[in-house]
Image (tube, rainbow, N blue to C red; front, side):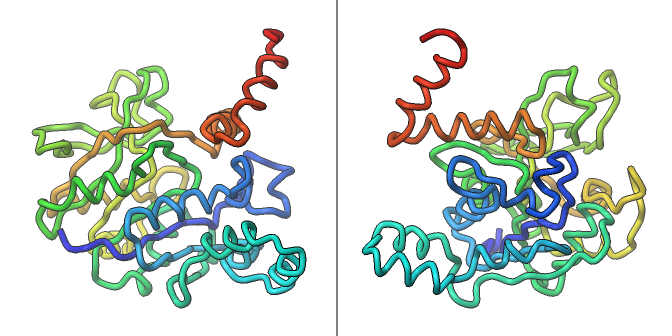
Length: 293
């Protein structure tokens, strides 16, 4: 497969499940411990070797662009106070000059439409797509695992990250049917969006990480409306799968659906417990809250 240099981050959603917190602040800027959701996902992409970060934004999302820019007043104050560690942290979080692009999704027409809005910035090369609602905790990022697994595939292959889900929750997700194994990958025989529990082709759900060929834009250009009257990415992938191979990687690590309140809170606890500087205090506080201390 050709090198994956670009990654798309759809960050135009309204975040209604977190109102009123997201009335004036994008959901992607909600903190998991001390880093915004979007920063965790960008870090995953950077670790995987991504060179160009493409954000599909919407109204009231300018703070995301500001987050990935320098703030001279803050840097000046930290310099005067000799806060060298904080200055280094801020510099490390930033994409390099000219490596971040922002484009607008003017209407909330679904994930497929958000991806289509990035077409001119992506061009005619394969790209990664990372949903900021999903965090994957592992010492090797999910996208890096996907790129490693894809090295020996043909130049027209597409890959989606999948994980197992209990049968009683399959109707909440996109589910894949799986065929022949190729190394750590499975060929995808079917993709179904939110199937009835007794009609799901497997117990593997699509998790929010994709490597897609640019031909997906041709399918999305038709602007076919699917579930909820939106342009669905899954529908475009089903169409593309008629002419190009799709593979699924059951990645290593634990995912957190940070689009839900429980998933977001669970991510905060898990990431805090993974931090040596605060984990002991967090464990003690959890024991106290649970009445075990």
